[in-house]
Image (cartoon, rainbow, N blue to C red; front, side, top):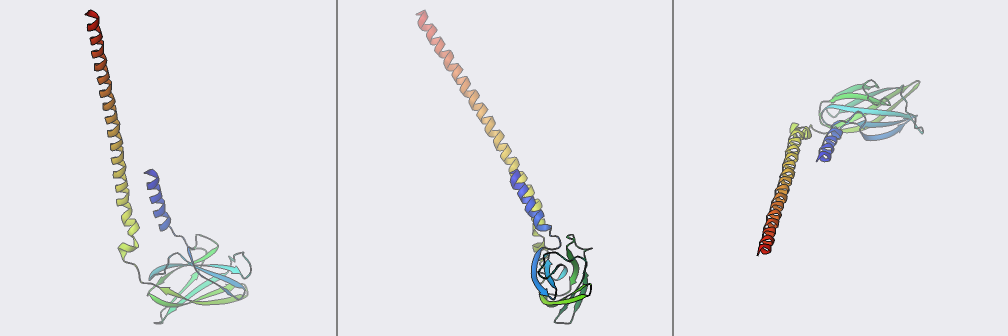
Length: 198
């Protein structure tokens, strides 16, 4: 029971704690750079979103951590979102993180602009943004977690009572058997005494 409770807690915490980084959306090589785009939410949804970029030299595995990275997104209606991705917003300091607000669902063109010393490069791609989930569906784990804990506690208490009840029944049974043996022994001794007197 304790192991089940711990496993439930760990699964809830693990799924709810998603730092910057998360899922790789794509990886591209442009000029002297290899660019990897991450998102903490899959799929991306309308509203606040976390996009992170890892920047490396093409053909190398050493991240570049002193560049400037800019994100530009535009949808079919002409709405534009611009933001700079920085280490300041990232928990993993190898990443450039940007917290952006996506005002509409649908198809968005995306441009990542990289400035590193005298080098400048752009990566063009697209993002699909989904509609937000219903509130209950989005937070179902948080909603169901407290009742689950209560149910597990009730089951645990019930199992303990059953165990105590069985132990009491076992003791009563043993006492009954002991008393029966004592009576039988006394009867036997009485019968022997009577035969001796005769």
